[in-house]
Image (cartoon, rainbow, N blue to C red; front, side, top):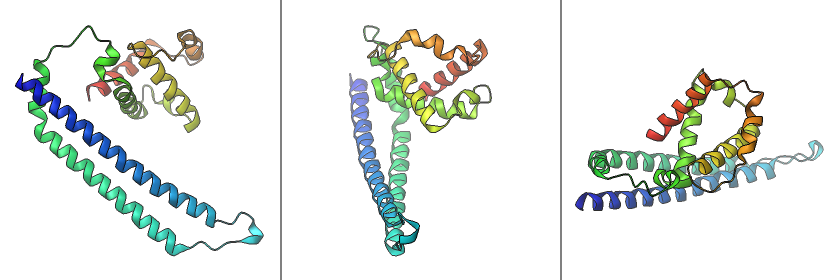
Length: 196
């Protein structure tokens, strides 16, 4: 029971750390968006009516953004070091727990957040893997659609909300010449991603 308590407290701490990271990321994103808006409003809309860019303001905002990013990196590094220090005890407790087969795979892997994180890790690996890179090197708009569809498919396939029409699966991939070799490579990347 003590091991389960350790796991629960570690999960609660990790959740709190994730929320803190999300809050910091929102702050960094907000600062960068303010900078983007400031630059966009300072740029001339008409070549004949050129506006001067307030260089001092832009430098000040860039400095703030750099500081926020540096703080965020430090926080992530600190969280990783703290997690590494407590890692073996958590891993040992996790190995002793039984997998609850009454819950869906979607619930057992941790729901949307973990599936999305696993996919993002897999996507990064796919861009590095010469076997499947060509399927994933697309423009950003197309990749956003592919990511959304893959996430929806995985979510539904693992027992979560069914948001993807399975009837579209074969027609969507027919023209791509996906072989068993490519499928196995992507499956291998997903497996490695979910183990991280």
